[in-house]
Image (cartoon, one colour):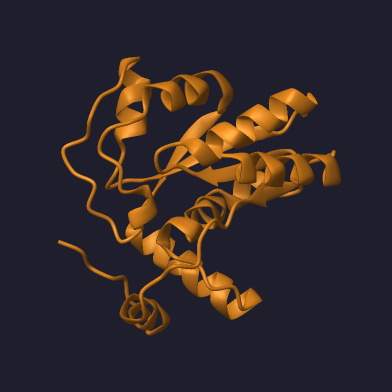
Length: 172
């Protein structure tokens, strides 16, 4: 979590006018680090968590007010494939995140393609999820200063080939 907090510190001090930051959620250390750094610096940016619609334990848990395991976590955004939330992370997210956005595997694949073709950035599924959420909500964010966390580049070659050919990797 120290790496995330350091990144968040640098982001918030470099962008004092930042309105929002989208952060993918796996077990929760990334978003918790972002919330902690924001709060420690007294920054006003909204922190928006991003989860897979196929691994939505944090959505279920926030809605229920307690940890709720999901029945499944089958997504090619495997860094977000969590079935049981971390209770400490859940509480920090409940107190510090503005909201959660669910993204589909197709939206994540679109984000991977856009990142690669537009910026030559290679991202894995979970790494591109925050950008997928931003793309999904782009109309409501016009004129805002927004950041996304692109958190990983560990995508399998066959999955990347599928994405670059216009498809979405299928997992069982």
